[in-house]
Image (cartoon, rainbow, N blue to C red; front, side, top):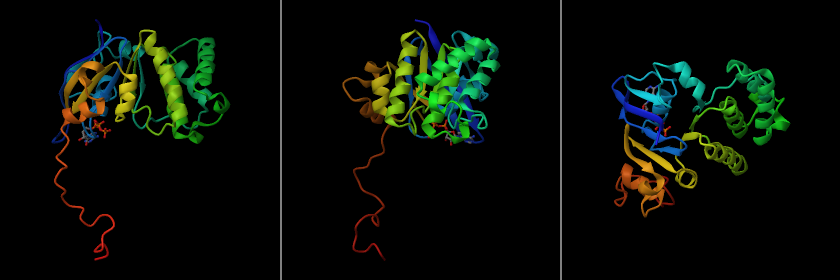
Length: 258
Ligand SMILES: Nc1ncnc2c1ncn2[C@@H]1O[C@H](COP(=O)(O)OP(=O)(O)OP(=O)(O)O)[C@@H](O)[C@H]1O
C-alpha cells in the first residue's frame, strides 16, 4: 500500500528540550488516521514539520512520495492544513476568506465561487457567510478553517485538534465532511486527546510519547481486546496513582481553614 505520509528520523529540539526525538511516522493512503499522545508528546511539532510550517533539525518527511522540504510546491499543492491556534484573516468575511484562499491556490474564479458556496452550505455557514471572521465563534472558526483547507481538494488533510471547542452538532458536521473525504480515497490525519472520537473515526492510529512513536498501525491492532483509552494508558504509562500523595488540604476537610 502507498504511504500518504512517511517520515524518517524526524527530529526537533528547542534549546535543551528535545521535542521530537526521531519519529518514523507512516500513514497509508486513504486512512482516517489519529495521532494521539499525552500533552507535550510532540504531536504539534511533528505535524508542523510534516506540513512545512516548522523546519526539522534532522530527518525527512514525504507526502505522496514528495519530500516536504525539498519539493515544497508539489507538497503544498497536495495538502490541506488546519493548524493549532488557527490564524485567519479576521477582517474578511467567511466567503471572502474562501475566495481569497482560492485565488492564492490559483483556482479559476467560477470554480472557487461554486466550491465556496457548497462548502459554506455543508458547514452550515451560509447564514454567516458575509459576517467578518473576527465575529465567528470557536466552532465557526474551525469550520471555515476546514472549508479553506478543503477548497483546493487536497489528497492529504492535516488537522490539529479539529474538534476542540466544537459543539456536538458542528462536530457531527465536521465528521460527515471528513468521512466523505476519506471515502473518496483521500487521507485525513488528525491529532486529538479524545480517545472515544479517535476510536469512532479512525482506522489507523499513531501513538506518540515523549517525542517518540510508541505504537502505530491499524486501530484494531493497537487496541487489541482493550478500549483505545486503556491501550493508550498502557502504552504511555500512567503514573502510579494507588498511593495518595499530596493534596491532603483539598476537599471537605475540618482543617481546611488552617
Ligand atoms: N516554540 C517552542 N519553544 C520551546 N519549546 C517548545 C516549543 N514548542 C513546543 N515545545 C516543547 O516541545 C514539546 C512538544 O510540544 P508539542 O506542542 O509538540 O506537544 P503536543 O503533543 O502537541 O502537546 P499538546 O497535546 O499539549 O498540544 C513540549 O515539551 C513543549 O514544551
